[in-house]
Amino acid sequence: MAVKEILTVPNPILKQVSKPVDGVDEDVRNLMDDMLDSMYAADGIGLAAVQIGVPKRVIVMDLDWGKEDGKRNPRYFVNPVLSDPSENTLPYEEGCLSVPSYFDEVERPDRIQIDYLDYDGKPRTEIAEGMFAVCIQHEMDHLEGVLFIDHLSRLKRQRAVQKVKKFVKQREQDDAA
Ligand code: GNR
Ligand code: NI
Image (cartoon, rainbow, N blue to C red; front, side, top):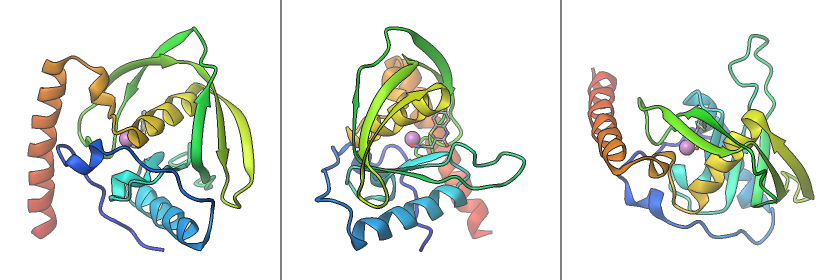
């Protein structure tokens, strides 16, 4: 288990389309463990492998992270496929560990089906709603090289990248001090 650095915009690796994995083996489980450590260390609720520089179709998530009781509820999604989105959409104020310090509203279907392999390589199907639906669609976008700011106007996206560059520079200075 290891905490890895999370890549931020405008790193071109974040634009790569992630490749499916050949099933869940030791290497994929190690990757998922590192992703979960990195996600918790950064106080996130989800993470795609490409965010730590590994363009594979692997996602980790913990929607209970940060809640009062402090209990962990990690979830793992390997080679996920989304289908059957609801017609109904809902706006949600999103953030991204790869776009730190910037938040904005994105509108997405509020309900969607997800097929995937779990931590043990077992195929599963679930219906995602609410925060789960928001997060899984945000993470699936990462697998296609898409960030939540790509759903915004070009002006907003440019402002977001400028803000992130400043934020990351300051964070590096603070860390060095
Ligand atoms: O930690 C995260 N919070 C979040 C909030 C609203 C919508 C999506 C997210 S995912 C984000 C972590 C992340 O960047 N995952 O890719
Ligand atoms: Ni993200």
